[in-house]
Every structure is written in C-alpha cells, then in structure tokens.
Length: 165
Image (cartoon, rainbow, N blue to C red; front, top):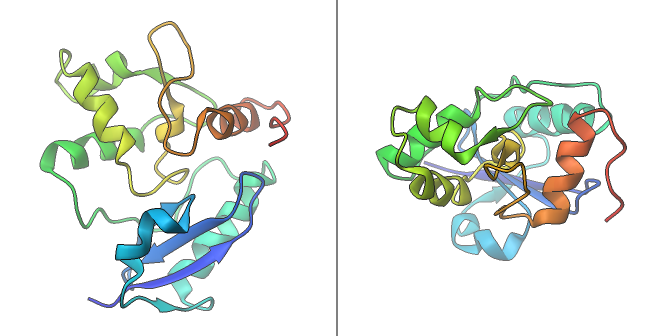
C-alpha cells in the first residue's frame, strides 16, 4: 500500500503526518524517527486525509477542537499495543488517566508497565492522545515527544496557555 506524508510546523515543533490513503497511520515529532516509514512514501500536501488532519490539528492548537474526526488506522503493532492505543482514544479532552486506570480499562489491571510501554510506541501522537496518561500520583512521565511537550498539550487542553517551548 502506498503511503503519503506531509510535514507541518506546530507550537510543539515540526510534525510529520503519514497516511495510507484512507487514514492517518502516523504522527511523529522527529522525522528521523520515521525514516524507514517514509521510504517509498510520496510527499503529498494536498492528499485529502492529510489535509483533514492538518486542518484539525490547526483547530486543536487554536483551542477550537476537542476531538479528532480524521480516520486513523494502526497498521502495525501487537494486538496488545493496538488495544492500548484504541483505549487512548476514549480519554476525554482535558482529562488525564493514570497508567493503572488505562490498564484497568482494557481489562489488564496488573499490566501497568506493559501499558506504559505500549503507549510509548503509539504511532499517532496527539490525535491518539497518549499525552493524557500520567503517573499514579499525577506526575508527567514517559512521553515520546518529551515531558515539555506533554505539559504543553495538557495545559492547552485544560484551558491554560501552553508552556513556551
């Protein structure tokens, strides 16, 4: 299947979006993280799925969007990882869950560390909101984009101005 990609600046740095033609399959902070995924992909700043995602991200960062409608697909990952990523989509805008709460919601209450590991491999940052999962004590832990970006996104969603990066 042919993949398409585009890049866009954002308040949290440049983002690379990848689509499989029908859905977003990747949203990454650092293009070097996705070199292998981009091999053979075509840059297409006008692809309908990518355009929709870009428009929704712009609205999100402007504080005008609380949910994403662009289709997403997990075209890799284990069954457990996909289960964790699907569960992330149910965390409401402006709310946080602990890793333990997420583990409980997928019926694996003792799999807290495994949930954290799966979240760390989430291929669709922001749209699939792994930034909404925090430590049991509310601390900001583990985030592929870095703790500063996680804090920015959570502050944005909780109606505060994001931290300057």
